[in-house]
Image 1 (cartoon, rainbow, N blue to C red):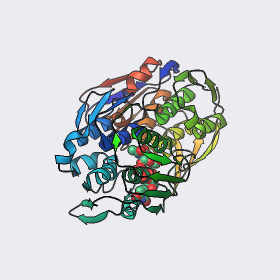
Image 2 (cartoon, rainbow, N blue to C red; image 1 turned 120 degrees about the horizontal axis):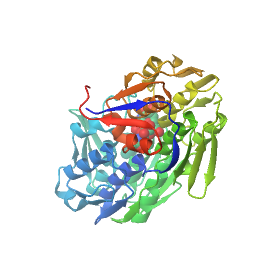
Image 3 (cartoon, helix red, strand yellow; image 1 turned 90 degrees about the vertical axis):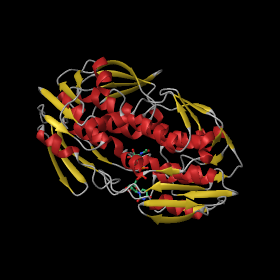
Image 4 (spheres, rainbow, N blue to C red; image 1 turned 180 degrees about the vertical axis):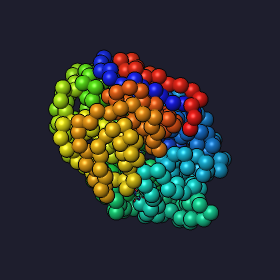
Length: 421
Ligand code: UD1
């Protein structure tokens, strides 16, 4: 297992191009199942989650090639098992979003139930409710969900919870259904909008993505296309916090500024200078950070995927910050690790009170999820002395070579292979 070692205290400075968005890429990979012919995806981040999705597509019978430019040809899927097995779904929950396209195009799917996950229970009841409304017959047995439908029909779905994956799954099922569908109380995340853009380019008829109601007119077929993935708002936000806490000055080239309003607003509240330039977002950390109050909410609210990183910023702000997590029930696993580095954080239910500024001191730390790991790397950038981040595979799921990228901005950071787990 790899580890990352950081010698804190360096300012981040320079320019960096933001990578393609993980969460957009994963869903577009699934959507490629719907096309007649090959889809070519550009600007795909080289991440283990993307590779896991490619492996799943191969298991389903797709021909997949390349990495940054990925080609996906679903011609062989019709003859395949149409099954997403436990080994793949357990490593990556987003695997369940093959359900919609498999069912919509091939009339059946067998997908392992994802089960519990480190950041909460994460059920898929809303995915199933939506697919049932389009005519799917659903059976749960032996830890798998089996879905069947000769051809899905249009339907009306009102989601009980705002769910990104649920919205995307049902949207991918509805594009080939007979008739029109209306999905209400949907997620408005940029990744939902990006998926809709992709599907419409393939020939789908989707309106309203980015609003609470999506309308879909079913079509008979879709074609494979060439598409470049949007830049990653969470990678950009993570690097922005890195610049902020190190009192650095970084230009995030291609940062998707329009998708980052809530994050930019919180950084500005903390006194961080964020300026939109012709080719991206410039982030300059102030000498003294101000405390912030932030509550995670579905988009356009503050993203849960930036909560752990923002908490590191709060440890460096003068005064008391309040961070509230409303999306996932168990997403404070970084808190005890930050505490071991000297942070003053008290969690009460879903609220975390952070008192700062506290000098952080380097320690050996590890996290059990992706964004928590990123927060520990950020903490290492400002900590005094050496921080060793273990279980780097969590980080590699969602950040391409974060160590190299931070090093290019001036951080003292190294990756070592074969560390203890
Ligand atoms: C996606 C993102 C993830 C992000 C999350 C919230 C991808 C691949 N992952 O995950 O990075 O943290 O959105 O922005 O895009 N829920 C139900 N029933 C369901 C589905 C969800 O109760 O059927 C609940 C979940 O338990 C959670 C909340 O809804 O509390 C939001 O989850 P959801 O939006 O579905 O997250 P994901 O799509 O899994």
